[in-house]
Image 1 (spheres, protein in one colour):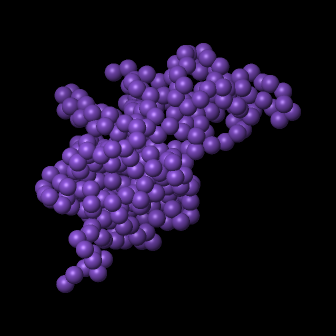
Image 2 (spheres, rainbow, N blue to C red; image 1 turned 45 degrees about the vertical axis):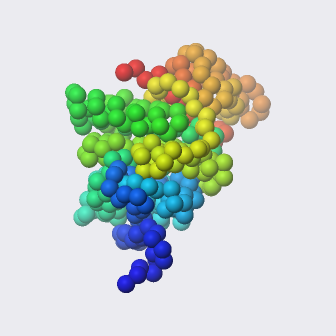
Image 3 (cartoon, helix red, strand yellow; image 1 turned 180 degrees about the vertical axis):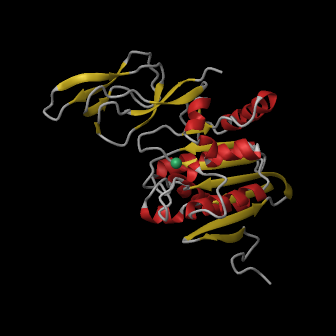
Length: 328
Ligand SMILES: [Zn+2]
């Protein structure tokens, strides 16, 4: 009997139900060959981060016609309750899903959600997993690379090199995660991409693009192009023409940005991606009477990946997410 959801050859569509959350799972197969690489695309893990969801919804009607080889599994929202309530965390228990992978079948709703998502990731036997996130309205799109802290020696070097090579095909600024000690302390090895890299030992990329709470057509279009480049790079599709994206070349790592020395309203003196030296004045600071306060200076050489989505900073608060040179 024909599946009513598959009038033509379309994707296989399933629903993964965990408590109050119903997650769509779409499986596409290459027209010419089902064998070949397997890629999983996920988005909207943080329920308020919507640009990735927007890009996947725009691409779902197109995947069927462009996919030639291999298999593609798409989960457009991993946190549908958070999407509805514009919340980062899973509303049922207020946990950050991106710090608890591979989850637990016995735990709270977030634990069970993570376990169910993990089973979908693992059963796809992926060659690459790409998780789409959003940072802020004023941000450069960038690829965030996890640390394979669960591995050592040649195994770690080879997996991280493979991951870096795949990140480079996105055409975006490439940023490594915090150094090992912070990476583990922040439980980033239990993020979706961190767990895939460290436990499945499979390449995994986190992409940060666009504002969180609304779909900006330009940012959605940039991300669509990135996804199509990834699929072509993985040989699932033939080469595609996509508009180049703005990119800061080089090897970088994520750092928290320059901090306000006192409370105040900040006005940046730098633009996104503008590289400055250590000690540079990067923002002016004012009180609400219009009096200039001592400004914000860069402690390290680097550039702004995204400005915080606020105007007033408390003392010691960073004005942005910062990128510093990655020292191998
Ligand atoms: Zn996120």
